[in-house]
Image (cartoon, rainbow, N blue to C red; front, side, top):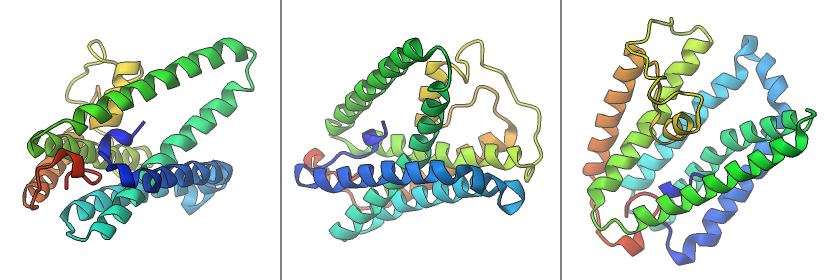
Length: 233
């Protein structure tokens, strides 16, 4: 679901596939220890882990983009892919496990299977869209927005654990694109969409977008769509 970030060369497919498989296995381990993590650090252990993962993911992508070493770039982007898979796959495992305990098992399984197929189809569509972008600017904008969304989610987590005080949203766009429907979830994953954003959320999102985009624009780009490593190479 997240492979749209990585436009891979043919000889790197196995390397990134290994990162995905390792992420799926690690997500199963995380799911097992998730209740225990939820009780650590006065009940905020899991949230702290999510913050660390988001920061590490963002750092890995940016460093991978700015380095000139091919091996280092490949390792950093593989690490980023690994970190991206873990929390989302863990959420899916928790959801799938809870579904298995309901009486609506057959119909829900069909719905989950259809939804998973749609997600895979969209990921491949995005993969080929970015694979065939000749110019680096649109791809850099997309990556900056994605990473800014990841960092903005930290604000939501900090508000949930009462580290940051919650404030009234600036607007409510649930009537247009609701947070809980498929479009809201889709745009939330891609660019951190929030139907009821607060001022601090928008400030973090805007500042992160500008800073990350500036860092990406300062890198030396070789515009060859067939030799893109993870983001832009």
